[in-house]
Image 1: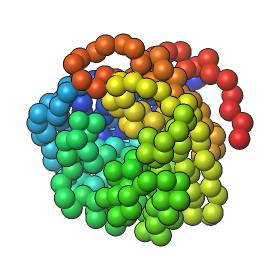
Image 2: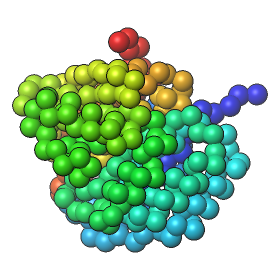
Image 3: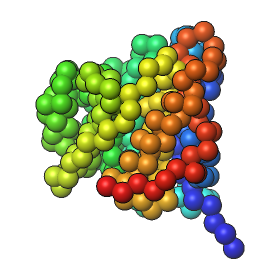
Length: 275
């Protein structure tokens, strides 16, 4: 009998469909993984704005996670937007009860349209409760500043910030700093607590359709980890997936603002990646 490769996403819902739970499940499906979800918050969101947020109670967040994991075998979890610190704590407590091999944390704090997606004390709770149990954290440059106080201006800043993440308890960090380093390429930097480091380079694509790229990248990494790729190769494959998804959706008009990427461009045909 065949088994699905599975992945659970714990994140907020984007009614516009470009980011959050919706982007996560699209990414997982595109890559060939069976996605499950636990929703932390509901947003009234489009390509132009986030107009409202309704936080899901910690009890319901915990119940969603436990109900899924008690029934369906799962070794990989992706965590995205967490609006309440109480939810960050209950997620950490609940996941600690299960033997999850891979936990990917995308610390979503601000939307593409610059709307705040977390309460002020969420960062401290993530640092103290979630970061120690996660396999990888994937902050962008704005999130790097919130966690470390370091403003990314160049590659040296990226390396300094990565070391700070390791110092505060991260097992591995992938800093998405490409758009802050002027180049024809987009750069992401991986550093692990064992000292392994790697710069990932991808083609920089000029487009307004970048809504949900962070959610999709972390979900792609989780999907490849669920398929038993080692972390460096899972990131390489995920970065290629995102580059292709951005490229194929770069000239498509959806909405009046920051459009989504094209998740379903045939990622299963991608060539194998060797580092």
